[in-house]
Length: 196
Image (cartoon, rainbow, N blue to C red):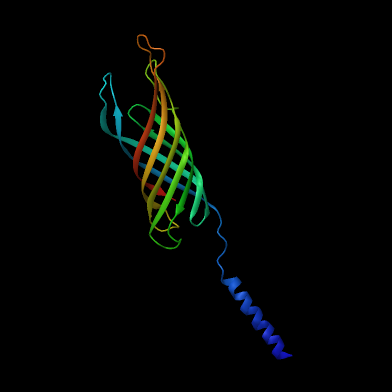
């Protein structure tokens, strides 16, 4: 009888040990990434001539991602930003995803990918008389690095492609029925920031 009782206790301990050793389930937490940077690109345009011109442009950008870390490698949320283009000041409001490519752990350098998509509003834009600028759709995939321990604030370095649309009505000239401009901003964004 003693042998059966000790075997039962031993078997219970053997099966209970893996349950006790398992990590506690991941609890979703708030996450934030705030970044500032520069947008790089080229523009093709013509000004009252038949010949087209091409010029390089650098513009300022800022954005903040606020969301929920659903899993150790996945966060979903919303992104709000400001992009200062030469002809427009647009405010993209997007849904966003952040995904860590490396296994979660104590690494001080981690690679992540991002995807933001939504609509860029012209709420902050000030148009000259006769002009009316409207925003448009925006999509921005990217890749970046987090530098620092996962439990603490991290330094972020990211590189994104950003495609943003905008439309503008312009003042009419002599004998014109309408004057409309459809803009597509294709930019590479280089940003620095912090994450917690």
